[in-house]
Every structure is written in structure tokens, then in C-alpha cells.
Image 1: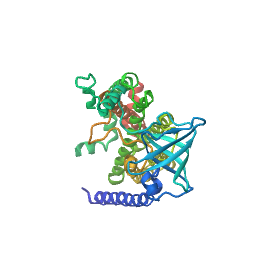
Image 2 (image 1 turned 135 degrees about the vertical axis):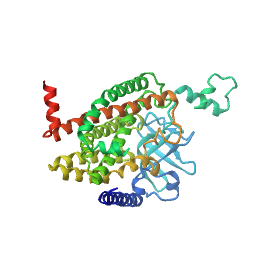
Image 3 (image 1 turned 45 degrees about the vertical axis):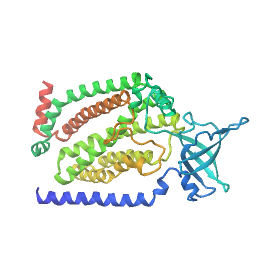
Image 4 (image 1 turned 120 degrees about the horizontal axis):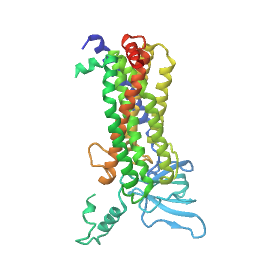
Length: 157
Length: 247
């Protein structure tokens, strides 16, 4: 390669490496601000500030959703399978909200460790499947999956 | 390989080459995109959780995919501009930047439309969404800077540096969903693993991605030809070409 081009190429590579390092260090320093939400373990460990608007995210614990029959108030536990936090919310939940689904709640953590949310967003994962497959998977995991069941092969997904 | 690289130095050679390539790109692209979209939007099964609303994935993923690929291609061309001072590389950057901006906007827009029914919000300052918005602004910056400097050579270098600086945003977009907690779900297509959806969903998705790539190729050729004609308007071959077209 021509020496001038070689020199230019080195400059370009240095430029790229320099910017990558700079941006890498910046995002590393800001990582707590870039994280969209606190996980329940972080809240349990006391990392999350009290009485400041923060977000908490995780799975809605199975069997923890309690609706107030008189109002739109709902209470549920959000877990990351290590610890969990009690969330209280008044309002309309998104369609995808269900036990065992991911959520991100926005609100304040009060002194008694309850998370008072004013917005609840549903989080979904990257696994898409047809309803029949989901049903088959559920039956298989529930242990009622019979030999000779027609939906058997589909669980291979 | 190097021979092709040297031939690319000639706008005239590229012009003729593009003429021969374009019908195939357009034909293949339209066929694949139509097959993918019709299959995906009308025949692919529903999702067990989101029902029909997940179908926007067949537009959202291809446009987001292309938006990032176009930027990477622009970055390669920008490096070529800086190192080899090839005119055609700058023609490529200037011609495809608006296309990339439109694709990024489309990805953000379809994402917002999808986010409302599934997440419950149009927009959230999540790492993936924010880095994608930065990509849109990078495209705007490239277009504006290119238009602001009238001297062809200095404009080419300034734009190339901006494009190269911005390329660090691409790995941030790609890995944002893994490095940080985000509302956006991780990628559906991974290079190393099987896609996390059954074949009757990912095949149409792959078809629409490939189709959009080909259509992008066709459109890039078309825009580059126009740009070449404008820049080379004083050369003999362009004059002859125009005269031949008129008679």
C-alpha cells in the first residue's frame, strides 16, 4: 500500500479506537443512569433511593396479584427470583400485564419498602410463538402431557 | 478483488455496471419483500401473547436492520474516502444518507405504534430507543453537513469524519438490550443461535429483510447514478450519454 494511504489508514483507525474508548468510558460511568429500572435485588440491597421517582422492573410473581374490588387499585409483587418488592398501583394496566410476565413500574419507594407506582408498563421477551404451541408447552410443563398427544412434535420449538 | 476496487474508482464504469444490476435488484427485492410481507401479515400464525399486534415486526425489524446496516456501509465508504480519496465512496455516502434517515424514522415510528398496545407507552427513554434516536440525528447531521459545504472535496472529508465518529453508536444500539436493563426485548435474530420464533414466523421475516436489502441496493444505485450525472456533467461521456438519450 502507498505510504501516504497507510498513514491515513492509521489515523482513521486511531480516530476510531480513541472514540470507542471515550464513549466506552462515558457509558460505563453512566451505566446506572442508562439502566432503565432497578431490579428487586438492588432495591432489597438498598441501592435505590427512597422518595425519588424511579423505575422498578422484573417478573410479576405468580399468585401475587390482588385487585381491590371497590376501585382500580391493584397490588402485586415484582420479583427477579432472588428478592421481590411489593408494588401498589391505581389505574388501568396494559393488556399484556399478567402473572409471570415482565413489567416496569414507575413510581416512588416509600420508607416501608412498598413501591407506589403511577405507571406500569408491560415488558415482553423475544420469544414469539403461535397460541397452540404455547398451550402445548404449558401442558407439557404442567406434567399432564400424554404420550400420543397430537401436539407433541410442536413442543420441539 | 483489488481490480474491482480500482474499477470502482471510475464513476463511468459504475454507471454502466449499475444499469445492468438494477433490474435484477428491483425484481428480486420486490418479489422477496412482497412474499415476506404477505406471508407475514396475512398467513403467519398469531403470537400467543400479543395476538395480531406482533405482526408489525415484519416492518419494524427489516427497517431497523437496514437503518443500522446502511450506516455501517456508509462508515466503510467514509474510511475509503479518507484513505483512498475515492470519489464514488463520497457519492455513496451522500446518496444513501437520506435513505438511512427514512429507514430509521420508519423503525422508530413502527416501534412506537407497536409499543403503545404492548408496553403501554409510545416512547420511553430506554437505551435501545434513545440510541436509535441518536442514529436518526446522526443521519440528519450527515445530510446537513454535506449540504452546508459547497466545495466537493472538503465536504467529502468533513462528512466522512462525521460518519466515522458516529459509527460507535452502532454497537451501542446492537448491545444496548444486553448491557443495560431496557424495556425493549433482546434481538429476535442472532448470528450464533436459532431464531427465538418458529419457522413460519422467522422465514417471512427473513424474506422481508432480504427483500428490503435488495430494494435498498436498487434505490442506492439509482440515487448514485443521479449524483454521478450531476457531478460529472462537464465530462465527455455524460454529454455523449445525454445526447444519445435525446436522439
